[in-house]
Length: 201
Length: 197
Image 1 (spheres, rainbow over the protein chains, first blue to last red):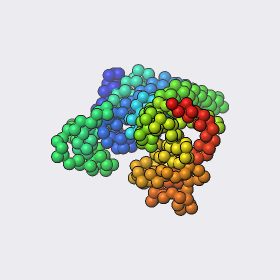
Image 2 (tube, rainbow over the protein chains, first blue to last red; image 1 turned 180 degrees about the vertical axis):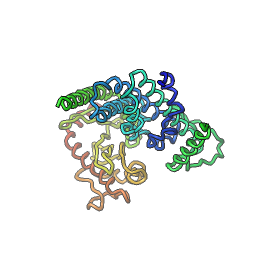
Image 3 (spheres, rainbow over the protein chains, first blue to last red; image 1 turned 45 degrees about the vertical axis):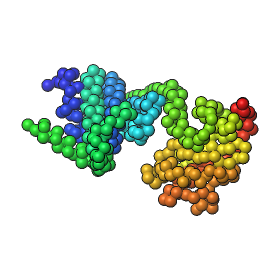
Image 4 (spheres, rainbow over the protein chains, first blue to last red; image 1 turned 90 degrees about the vertical axis):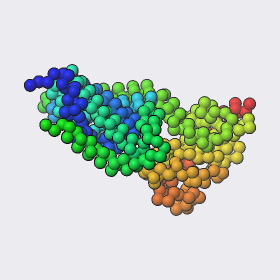
């Protein structure tokens, strides 16, 4: 019945991988995955918020009154998001400029609130930590994968830590559709389709 | 009734605690954020408008008290003389505050250059205030006094087509800059003496 702690972690990597299986949190998924780097940055920021808010929500779950639990969760989440925003401004300013408004928008990312409400408020601290970390890593990997595909075809490069690597030769004509918003939908749809085919029993 | 009290107490404690934590972190990171902004946002803008200065305007910056706030001023030295001073003001744009860096020739009170630093204007419309070199270039050489207004408002500045609100934000920031300049001029002159050699 009850899953082991390792299982709580690994479910976030495949069975409940957020953008593909739960199809949640699509706003940042579609908006920031123009490059791999942006995807990873956004993923790590979200992971930090997820893990911290999961830990805090689960350790306070007996204190928080049921009627105002959503308000409490939002305060906790918003606090950590602001922490991320300030720290990112102080130490990774170029990344902050690229992610811009999508960092404060983590507050309303339904993955974070969803995990607090559906998991952390009903489970122990260690389990919630494993759950937050698993979902966070899964989210980061999804964003990185989506970012890689879009950047590879959209601009022919892969950007990691400020250095762009040209993958294709100079005669490569960028498929700019991929880095635009509709390209993100199509790309997400195709990846969803591949995942469903692979996971079909 | 007890539920009510508990709800209020828990929420209050939680909110107070987060508020305190955030205030502490904001204080702790304020200096680093300022530095990062200097390198990545204001730096390029200053270098662009104080082009050809023989000093490094960013390391030669100083702060002056203007009414109830401190402002940073960046000095550009030309031919051994501190000729131009750049500083930043903000104007109300379409999507929030627009930061405008303006450099003024201290001898002639003419605009040396204008550059937009931060903005949240519509990409491709209002954002041209930052990218369209012609828009900011029209300020260069204008006398730095009175009010800056766009032509539809009876002023002297050509607005960006389709982005009048943004243009008004930029001119508003400049008008404000004129006020600031008038206020700090005595202090500024004193400071600049030090750069004379």
